[in-house]
Image 1 (cartoon, one colour):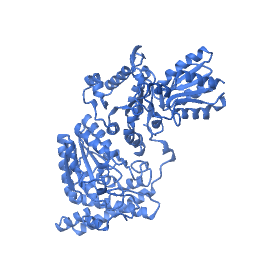
Image 2 (spheres, rainbow over the protein chains, first blue to last red):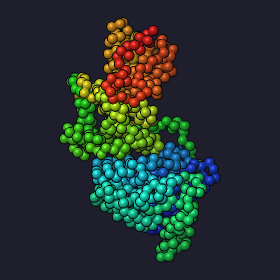
Image 3 (cartoon, rainbow over the protein chains, first blue to last red):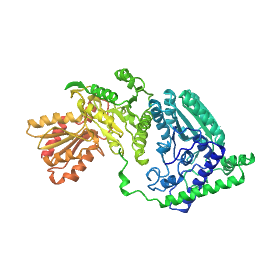
Length: 320
Length: 318
């Protein structure tokens, strides 16, 4: 049984971001080597995932999307079982029936992952309604992208959540890309958070590449949600440093823009800051890297050694 | 037994199930406005109006169902289901499987359809086969007050998403409903009339058309068996295969258009499993491949009528 992680110390968040990056880079490498499924990575967005997830309480629930590895790992998911799921093995979180795109881990409160863009927005209101009507304490964090914010369901979801006082932390990871389309080709304004006022709720934008700022904003917002039961829209302004779906040569990305965002890489940023303030030594960092390398190679060994589902699983879990 | 209209039978089923299980809730467009008795008894938290936004109504139902509630949502008219397809098909229907069985979706989505009120094609579209064709869902389409009550109660208790279609003109049709707890299991057809010469298989309002035709046929010496499918998924294959084997002649009648309709599936099952006993090809009598018209005369022409059923049976009898 995995344990839900809530450690939001800079050191823990740095190591978690590094693990996510290494996990995703390894998936890209496995894909490039062949015989491995295509995958949507969250490279570049680690601070958004870790900062928000580590601000949550154990009884909170998370809904995520196709770029979910960061949210899962930040919550405490075992990279080995995520990898097994991606590789269609029966030891994965969904018994190999999800694959890379919609991994849910109910035991960790990461539920109802949808890869239909905006699907998570339509489900979050129902989850929050259960929390509210069944008098549960936990709030609901719903991750989606700027692409989902262009779907009609974004409006329907925020309007209903505001109307019914549903405890939802809407987290828009504005990564500037909607599959292969630049965000500025699809909307005239830069920020999604401004839309919150139209629903009578609070909207906040935070630097999505600053994990400490993200965590502080998410902690503040979730405290307010717990008190007021009103939803809040938190926008983490960030950048997708890798392709939409691997393999992806990113030939469509402006190299100068990419270089500029790489210079704001959330991991290097925090690491440099901690080294400078002596909160971290280079020896500490090297040890972290060693642990992460081991975790990723253990994950590969576990996933590769895991069996595929029995063929009888083809038609199980269709009906309750 | 007591006589009541279908709308009352539905109201009884809702009230009884909400009384029985505190996790049963209901919301939708005008639900709290139309069902004041439910609001009075169960409060405005459990019976809610919503914005006119079918996607979020269905999505909220799916999310709530997966996390401990048993929602019933009223999506009004079947063509509006198009605005909730993502949530019904991709979420409620698939996320159990995708998640490896981590979640279940005990919800009921109610929608009205069917000719009779001349509302035209954007309020009347017998699209039930779309849902039959989608994994993870169950589909119910009753024909009489007792079944409306009994099937709705079963649908609410079922741990899967159930699409519950109401054939519009039946809403105010009266019928006998057994007193006390009345449950009709999903997936069980009803033989409404026994016969030996021909099997007529139908559902919803068309069942009454077929019963009228069967009376006419009896007067000319043809003994028709009439089967009401009641549930379209799961489909009670045994009920109609047994009957087809007995009579050797099968006519399927529904208002939905013919191609890939429920009748196509029933005909294929009969052909696969009772071919050796058939005395004539299986026939279908259905609505045309056209949007439902509004003009009364066209709407009546759209729907199979008793005369048409009689003519089709005569053709089967040779």
